[in-house]
Amino acid sequence: MATHKYALVLSGGGFKGAFQLGALKHIFANGIPHNDGMDTNVKFDIVVGVSVGALNGALVAMNRFDLLEQLWDDVAKKGHTEIYTSDILNVTDDPNETKITPDFGAVLKKILPSSIFGTVLQFIFDRDEVMAEIGANFKKLKGLADNTPLLNKLKTVVAKNNFPADVVYRCGFVSLTDGKYYALGPDDFDSDKDLQLGIVASTAIPIVWPPMPRIKTKNGVIKNSSDGGVRNITPLGDVIGFIKKQQQPNEQWHIIVINCNSQEEAASDIEYGIADVALRAINDIMTNEIFQSDMSEFLRINELVNQVEMAKAAGKIAPDFELTDPKGTILRSFNIKIIEPAQQKDVGSTLDSSRKAIQKRFKAGFLRADDVLKTPSSLSEPWS
Image (tube, rainbow, N blue to C red; front, top):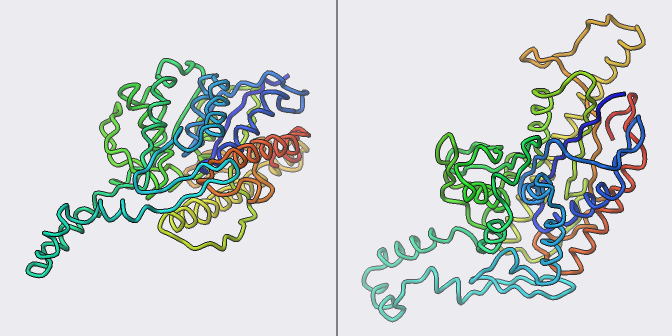
């Protein structure tokens, strides 16, 4: 009988991450089916996440699902201030809907010179200097909100030594300075503080939250780090790379991908402000397209490899025939289950942190996991 091992891939999605909580709740309560039966004591050997997936994944990798449930319960009960604050946005924590509007007075106060009276006179005689000061003040705005509350939460629960040695964990983020994507684990960071900053950086949706100025790692300082979903919305490739490095004979790997976005992108007819534009373009449309393109390519290759493996088993082609990538690496198929919302309306808006939205996403994740995991992956269909 094969040894069954599990890898977890968690996408980004802001407060839609409660969908992942629901799906994980189902997995830990009911198990994962496979050809040898049902594994009711699931332990993930590899956990990789970007954005909110990095946050959820950290607590899963530490085997602290209780803390993950508590975090989302706190958000549902207490609102957005559990994660962020803002002095230029008016955020109303209605139990049924989060309402966000800009505080124009606060915005003007940040970008206009300190002395309005003096500025009026100065503008008459030296317009260029005044405009230069306004421009300099505008550049100081790194984001619409401050995610210090999330960082403070992580300080109390996340530490390098809290991650089991036999579990691979990676959080993905992008440096806006060099444009590179980094997938780092606890041992890659210089300190507990830097690990916490890395997770927060991964969750920092551009424009909404500021990038992390400096994160110290064993290989140097990474500057201006932001949402990993900008370049790698679902880091499936990272997981496959880890499996290839450590896979042993007689091991059967199962990959669970929990995506916070539906393939069915919902229409959104609203009046778009700067935050709405950023979220709609970057988090909803662009990242969802990247995810779907990446998954379609992976599943296409996985299916081809699986057909070759079945043909070899049936004696239809030579047993030493192998498919390889351009670098000559032999390709293998993987058992994979993708859990994602059936419809975008099941998860709603990225920044909706209302109790109703959190509970709806949790329920949708639980039910969707139940639907996807009803049957085990088989040799003839290891992709789902």
